[in-house]
Length: 98
View 1 (tube, one colour):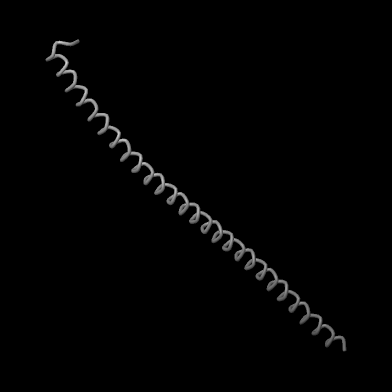
View 2 (cartoon, rainbow, N blue to C red; view 1 turned 90 degrees about the vertical axis):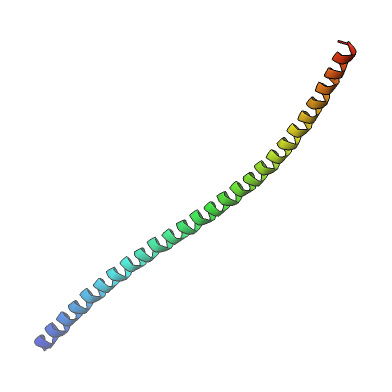
């Protein structure tokens, strides 16, 4: 009876040790899974942020292009007025008015 008890106790100790080892391994795997999920979330968030930055930059570029077009039109208009005023000045000088 004592030998059987010792054998069962030893098997139970081995089983408990195995169970403890498996629990530790399971916990380590769960921590690794959490780290990987956090990393994936960060990358996804960073990717979304980059997409928003790109959209914002494209919008600014389009706006700058529109502003440049408006500026060119304004310059052309002013240049036209300058030429007109220059002709008027030449005409005034020809007529002797100052």
